[in-house]
Length: 296
Image (tube, rainbow, N blue to C red):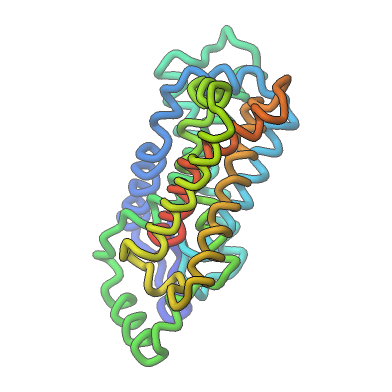
């Protein structure tokens, strides 16, 4: 998934530069997904997951990669074809890394059925792929693009910083990506279920309020990198609406991940809702940080 040159500079990257970007992608994939590769519940979920559920997970991840690469991972003049190619390459790297690690960890073997092997690799590979995408875009020092950076800076100064602006759809894509990275690391664990079952409605309300508070602090009051360019703080209404929307994205992401891991199967509506709220704390942290940090 080496980033393609802009139209102003269509010279192909050298092999060394391409390997540097692949290396960043591998590093990012492992940084964000290593806990999942070592998590027992994820192995079990992969072995028992229904094929259509795995297919839905792959499709959702691909859409998420398209959104991230469109708004943060590539240059603003990249075509959708380039975005799609990068997303496919990142998923391919995710599959390779997941398969290699699971084999070396002894989690997959030739004695297992094809369904078990495929399920474990797919469920691990998707989070790895997201990490690959983020790592490629965010871990680079930019040493090979000084000229492009200088040109971009000049254009931003002339255009009032227009190139860094990401509209609402892009912000939501980045929030979804960040929430997925954070929440997927704890969603498969039994602790989420235990906390949800043992929590009273009053504690759940407290967790929901805490999540909103965390999101609001990160987005509007903590002066995180990119906050001034990405979110509005000019009125209480803007702060409130922004925090509510981010929390809604976090809850939606948490619900999708919990559904995929089968946490809603055979439990009451209250327990399902409680699990979403409990996981929503981590998802909100990721969604809020994602809106600010997972972009250039």
